[in-house]
Length: 591
Image: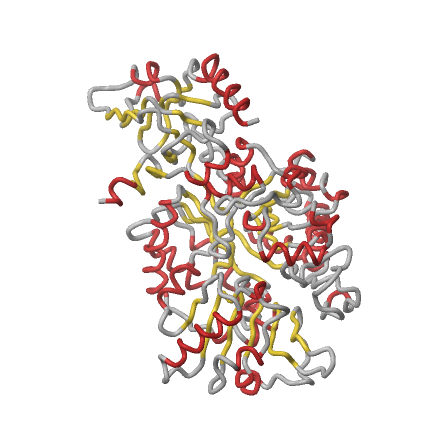
């Protein structure tokens, strides 16, 4: 199929793609600063899909066309760069990423243990034991990234006690939505048989004895584990931001959306943006009503969000809000139909009167969520990101948006549905009607231990309808691709490959059960470029290589349309440009 597609694209390029010169209005009177020739540029512009050359002036594309056409625009001081048939793409987006998780972990390495993602129960216990023994003065252990899906069942205090019992221990799982406490930590916190579940959270209990097992989900994890994570100051965030953005540029990212933004992080971003400047573009979705941050006051979160306007700066757009509506796929996602196995029955679902049918947690009702949408629209925020894993949570978002739209007459913001593991058939047409963009994160588009657990819990029929990219697109909706990194992080090109193959782009193997939801290579690229730019109100400035747009682009070592799709993840980013300036150069980095 891909050889046929490539031939069609190449024929189209010969007949049409390189023959039309697109020039920005007024550009004819300004000579280019730089001209790039002999490129294989996939522009993501339907009117001119391929281009051979382009000209840049003052950080913008001013002309796109053939090498002969573009070189004719050069002046005596114009720099000409021969790309020697290398592929060029618009700068890539990651519209859902958690940058602090990279640098905070390394900064706190001597007080916070990071567990490898492939460590089973015995290996994880061994690592915890060795870490604590090497630090006898450590008052308590805080660890993160425990791969709970590798346990036979769920982690418990009994398991954690075998690794550390002489001081409190709090170990957060790789999902960031659950944690296990040892016996000492439960005693210190006062968790026992009679301790009630917190709102939007679960203290897992032994079904026979009723005693707490030590495993905490959602808000219980937020109350009893996350508050023990050591904090870092604004200066530390400033240094972390300067360290992590170049790493993203190496992967071809020119724009990101920082999810669950906290006041110190936004202050640090603003400080960098107004001093030496941000290397990449950053939009921020502030943390609000997040169960994993249940120890924080919602009033404090709202007060910080209300000050968003004073935090705008060059390349910094702090005008979005992130809200969680349900849990995670392995038992706490809000489902229309019950989980078949596992999960937790009689869940604490306070806004829905409890749930005896094992249908997961729902943190809001449609009226309260509609109220939040109206509140943030009125404050001038530019949109919201909704964490919605199960189809019941997805439907809640759609219902709430309908209510808010009816009351306001129109919604000015641009709204992002994050994760969307399961979407009911009857809800597919509603995305286009409500202009709700669906975001998919690629790690679970193919078989792996976490996905295997989820598929067993939802059953064979529903496992064929996960991450419904094809269905959303066919129903007229818009979708984007993001990483949710560093949780199960994939490089952008690997995620593009996985969206097309629905296979593990690194290890190969069988296709996902929902292989029919695969999309084409052009669609996957658009999801990480122009579609993501739309969510930032930037589709007229970014997301494609067009005259008049900002010159954010990347150079690859091979043409993605001329290689087997399974090799896309192996392509290397040679250079990354933001507004025509190099922010990553592989050759320079190798020296």
